[in-house]
Length: 307
Image 1 (tube, rainbow, N blue to C red):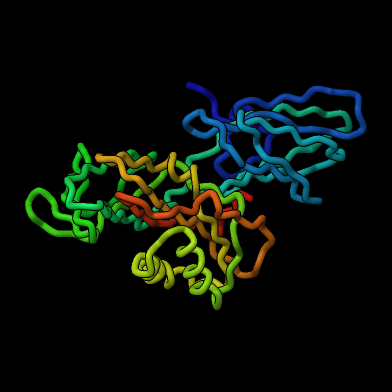
Image 2: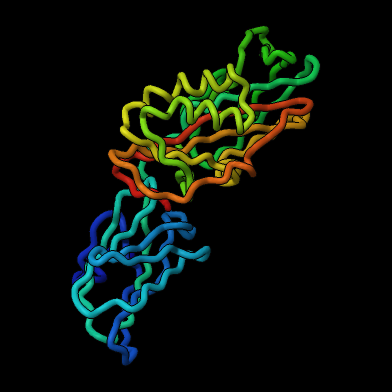
């Protein structure tokens, strides 16, 4: 049986879900130190965007697309390094470095926290004429709730131009609904910091910009407002390709327009500085058979933002 981190490297001070798989030190003949390596998740995939910070004074870096990192120019002494990623509790490792140390540190971090959910994605279908439609969902995670119940071969409904849906038994719906537990949380690389007092006008403006009708935006706000108003501020990001890859929709016949809105947010006690998101790439104009979906994902306050 493979030894655990504590068995292989009892001298290391490690907290959280970090499992060190390789640790070694070489001398490089310098006055400062460095630490480099590779971090992967429990599925052996690189954890894109994970940050590694030295605690005091603050300095850090981010994993590259291969999952590698390299922190240089670290002064000798004892340092605690913090590994952060949304959906995971913080992991730390404390190292006592001597001048010239070049530390190789590889590890596995995970699993992601089970609190993370993709909540309330609902799907509206607006064909130009009454049409039989098949909707198939491929979700990178586990579906927890669907209504109507999601069959193995996807939802099969007859849709009218006003969005009214009828299943094969004749039962009527106005949308298709699902929720799930993703294998990984959606990234928040930029966004907006919005106060509790400004959340309604902010959402009204941005949802209209992204293509929702007043009724669709109204339903979105009614669902999310009680959660958002619990916080003095919220960091909000509207996911793009990250969400499209996590929850892939296949719809037959193919729609001419697809509007998919996934709001990623975290409650804040005080405002923070984050890069502002450009929503231009997400803007859509409705033409022909249109599909609309909206949902969201809350990042608990206990987790670091991926920014």
